Image (cartoon, rainbow, N blue to C red; front, side, top):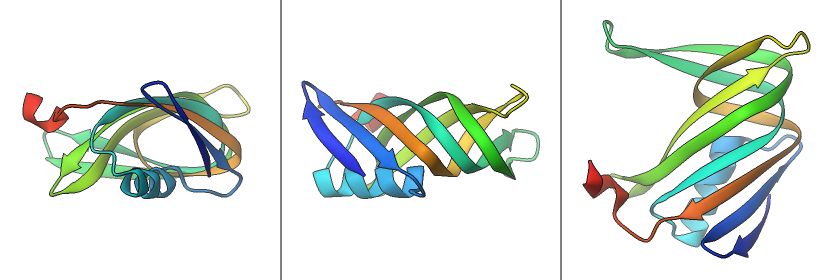
Length: 128
């Protein structure tokens, strides 16, 4: 992972075989970032998505292991029990341009993933 500070945030570049959630969590902890918003794009070799079923009050997970393009990646970060909590949604498309989406549990980068992270200097969690 490489990152560069920009006005109000960071540009983050993940490399082949890096995990998105794992890498972002490490980045946030190292930079001591508590709140923010991010968007990204890139390519994946594997993704695990989740769907929360309200009637069951639990998440259901599904993995896809194939060439996937990130069509949309966006999320926010706030502190939960003193540690960065990443809430992210993703839409990916396969070689037939069929899309899949949901909460991102984890994904493995196949080529690159570029993320623009905007840090908030406020207590995001207290807004809710």
